[in-house]
Image (cartoon, rainbow, N blue to C red):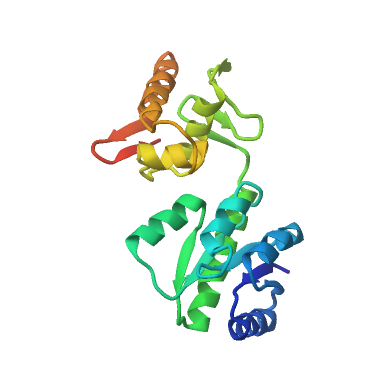
Length: 223
């Protein structure tokens, strides 16, 4: 049985969602403010429905605080959404936005899709093969022709991020925020230098083509 953490300061909304998801076979845990939500993370939910507009600690702040410790999908609930809000929310680690008022059936379908996707990803084997490369995500190693390639921690994390999202373009800022943290002090230009070093090491085995530059947009992993 999958577990959903429902966080909203409106008791009617919490009651509606709790009743709907329990009727559809989910276990629910509820919280009515940000601090309570943080305290309920120990229940290990499979997905979090998180209201954005809460007093004291809003949904984005809650997401930033817990994201390092939970890998499950986080879906924001909000009555209004601007592009700047989306950017802030995704940078904090959110996975999706649900606009209020919402269709409960559509919300249920979105929740089910996120949970399916999350558990498919969790079931994937921890090693993948790309040309001559073997990337072992558990051991954090990359080998080619039986030889391990020495990558620094951040270099491997960039390879891991790009290769686990094959074909998806990541700009330097997004890579920096994902791997260094949204509030990290530094410059996203460091990503270009890391990419250069990664390619130089891969080139020794003729595998540098896996990281492709999409001009004006960023980088993506290709077969």
